[in-house]
Length: 186
Image (cartoon, rainbow, N blue to C red; front, side):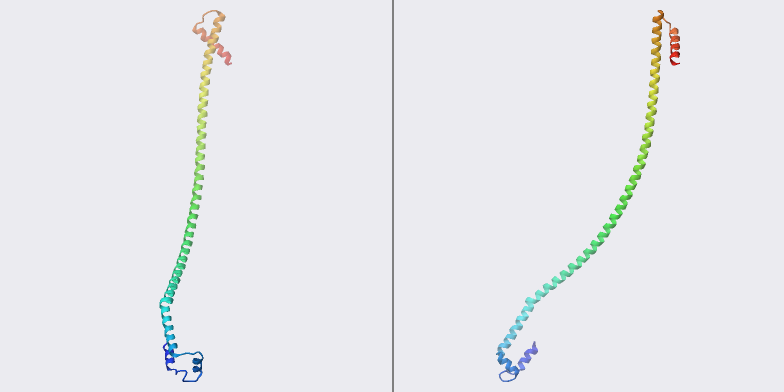
C-alpha cells in the first residue's frame, strides 16, 4: 500500500499538468485531500473488517473444517470397527452353529442309545412280568387243581356214602378218590 501512497505523493497536481492523468482527475473531479482521506478510511475499514469480521469468520470456518475432517475420520474408524465387529460376529455365529449342530448330533446319538437301552430294559421287564404272570398262573392252576381234586374227592365220597348208605373210613375215602381221579384224568 505504501507504493500507491508514494506514487500519489510524487504525482504532480492534476490541475498543473495537462496530460491524460490530469484529464482523468478533472473528469472524475478527484481532489487529493479527499482522495487520501478516503484511502485512509478504506484502509482503516479494511483492517478493522479483517481483524474483527473476516478473521473470526475465517477462524470459525477453519474450526468447522477441522471438525468435519475429524468427523469423517471418526466415521472411517467406526466403519472399520463395524466391519471388524461384523466379521467377528459372523465368525462367532458360525462357531455357535457348528457347536449347536455338534450338540444336536450328540443329543440324537445319546437319545438313540438311551432309547435302545430303555427298549431293552422294557423288553426284559416285560419278559420278567410274563414269567411272573406264567408262574402265578401255574401256581393258581395248581392251587385250583388241588382244590378241585379235594372237592371232587369230597363229592365222590359223599355220593358214595349216600348210595351205599354206610359210613366210609378214611382209607375207603382215599381209595375211592384215587380211583375217581384216575378215571377223570384218563
